[in-house]
Length: 73
Image (tube, rainbow, N blue to C red; front, side, top):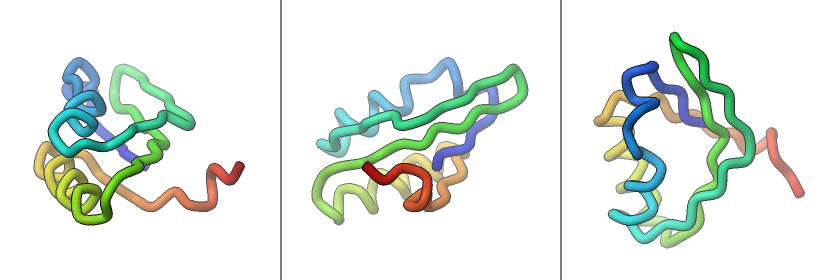
């Protein structure tokens, strides 16, 4: 789960994750308000690329928490 401030809502963070790190991103759930937003995001790709992407997005100010129990097909 990615939690972010409203300032980041206008930036293409998810797009950049896919492009810069070669990941497939799938939005499973999301909620955005004027104050903050959260996205349950599935990331597919090499484990090393996923780890680098999480470090990158965390550096941008996004809080990242595991969301394994939210979406099981």
